[in-house]
Image (cartoon, rainbow, N blue to C red):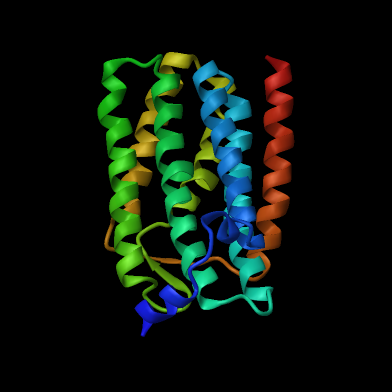
Length: 215
């Protein structure tokens, strides 16, 4: 039945990308690309701003999709695949590059970068197959929560030497990676948490901009 539905609903590739929730997802991908770009340049405060906004747009696409009327099942299936693929870039590749760049691309940081990406891929594969434990519970820590917690850790960047903070960053990312695939149940934040995330995103962006220009 699903195969038949997909066959009859097949349109051009870009027509599905033009769907409003998917456009929102792609804006989040652009934020992640900026974060990767600034990480490579060593502008880590700017990179963190890009990563935080990537989280905000990742939350926004689902909210927009649920509020839209007349969105087809095929558009939803396409959006779910798009969101998952973007997640591995935003919350796997991006923090891995941040770690590598902060460590001056030393070989010692390659195992950590691999662990970040590998656990991200494993977690997303698990979620794509099994989904939520229930309507409000994940198995393991959701990948987007990594950035929310990492941004708090990064506030201490200016208080420590770069070598010292690189160790803190390494350890923090390894702990988060372990939590991503751990057999623990974590809450799915929704409802009012979206507005709290928006305030948090704006506030943290302002703090990182202030720290950036204070260097």
